[in-house]
Image 1 (cartoon, rainbow, N blue to C red):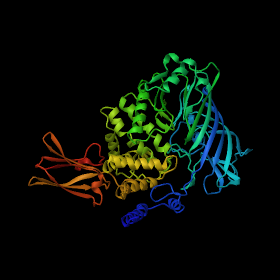
Image 2 (image 1 turned 30 degrees about the horizontal axis):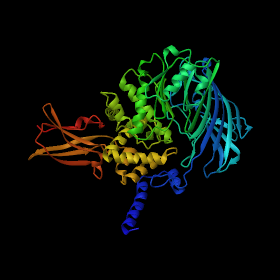
Image 3 (image 1 turned 90 degrees about the vertical axis):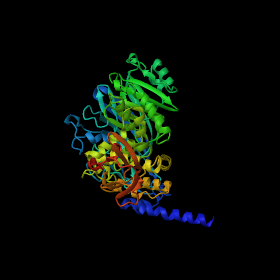
Image 4 (image 1 turned 60 degrees about the vertical axis):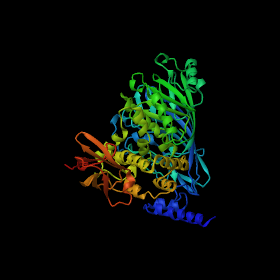
Length: 617
């Protein structure tokens, strides 16, 4: 090794701790670095571990009662170095249980008994769920099971549950019954909570606003429904020949190898879709996914095609005219995400966009409203599909860091949305939303745990602010370097559980740059977007302009001159122009004296644009 190589290695070694230490670390994160489950360069540490659960579920849906009867066997693997004295099980369906805390309003008619567990077993031994904290008991949306025999490192436990749960017909939060026979079903089965190297057990309740956090696992799920119901789910259907009538089966097989959209179920097929049996069982198999959802209907249309090895579907009500082109938009979205941004191949075998309500993502599934205009369809479809990467492929803790998935789902489709919805500018839409609320006491730094945020604070910290930050990062870093950092981040952390510091440190490690000047104001501090023209003077063929950063966020700077109706751009710089600056720029630009100076563009947020004009008449 040459002396130069030694010095280079030393410089890198010295640089790495500085990155992390410049961001004050909470004590739970410090512990992870001390135990080397995380590393200072953003890679998983040499001692990184995570637990997992495998699920075998058999469920039957009774549409007339909006009820699911189900049983499951869960194998839980303790891969941690810790001895566990409890197991925590999430009962997310208990959001609707009478008496449970909620931070989102629901109809009184939606309140029910929650997830009614009739049988529970641990390692083959049945146990009773009581009110005694020393015994298995339910609190909030959690079942806590104290272990008589502790679960040692490297050991596994087997749990069995038999339960029933109602599908909400009102107050359908992220899922529900949309008519008498069309349902999107999620948060419906007992699911082992995450035990990780940062917080130990995830003890947060599901109260309706913030989403969830799951370990990765394998799923074998059999869903039984009445004749002529079709089921779409978070996995590849393994028994199509057992469920579909011959004509539908032929079209399903064709769609699995077709570049063109195949109408697997058209209106003329309704009522003659499945085998002639009273009950039909759909079998789905999935590997290494963090959740499982499904949807069903006996009168929805089904369009599908295949790109590479991915079956891409839209399932929708015949009256939802805005859904007739969703299959094509979904296909284009997956191609774009795989080849352009982030440029990582779609990681699952299927994607189904189901015509439900709102806009909500699950592995391989989207629950979307019908939108009556192209820009809305393109925006909603691409946004929800982009969640494939964040949070699902990347295992994000949405309860704490919604900006690590919603921010990416805001930014990643920007160019796709603009290209496929003529006249629509998603960057301007995002900037306008941020400009409206930025800088107020509700504009909180994204690093504040998402579970502590509500309303517009949640919206700004999770979507608008990080979406703009990621986009401005790409512009000042350059698309090639930005994608190199993003690809390495995804490569390092897919199938794991990255934290904000793993993201920050990976980008700094791969880029070779100290990005704290950008990360701190955008993600940690009470800064906001507000630039102004403080002073301007024309002299001897030059413009001397002072631009002040009143809000403290590093933003792109774009300056125009205006003479009459004519407008010309004379200066443009990306957000890194503020690196090392004390909040003020002094520009000297060769230019004839204009009538007026204009600062900014519609794509750059600014909470007060009244000081973005300066008259030189």
